[in-house]
Length: 222
Image 1 (cartoon, rainbow, N blue to C red):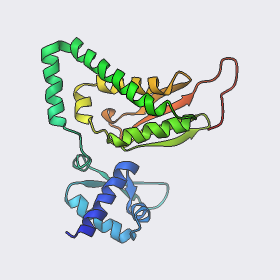
Image 2 (cartoon, rainbow, N blue to C red):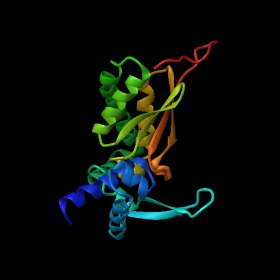
Image 3 (cartoon, rainbow, N blue to C red):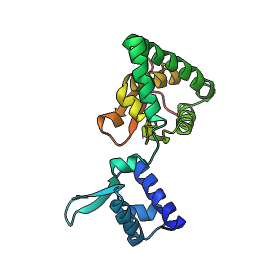
Image 4 (cartoon, helix red, strand yellow):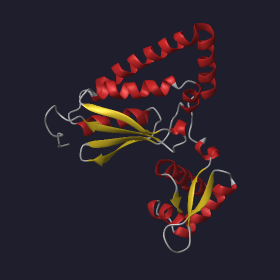
């Protein structure tokens, strides 16, 4: 396979990872390929076990074929040092017990909050704070982005979990991440997890909503 084909197929995998299931025509449109070219690459990725398709009916007419990553396809995106992390988590539990492991998670949480606040706390608007938080998370491998949700809320979207194996073995890590976001973004917003990879979702997503001022209407603006 040529380097150009490798790059094209890597772009398709990344696109499906960050956008979710897509039809071949949409993949081609996004990546400057013809529908036939995108379909050819998808078939090769299917043969390699990296993607799979499902027919979905949308109103009248023939079903449309949607392509998505298989578990093997998701595994192309690294879970950082998963074997070592799992071993360390089990060792911590064996040596320190559940209580000791929770204390270590809390220590990590406090350190993360302090680190994030140095960057996020210096920003102005909620959108700017979320953009800064997304940049930090992306550097850590979460493929994070921010999207407008409603007039008073945003979505923080994480298309990949680089510690998924560790979080599966120790779900206190996920609970801690939610606590970190709440601590960093402050008491004038609510943070709610609405999609969770460990619950079977394609991504993790958090809705961040401005709290209503007491006795008043929601604040607007950026």
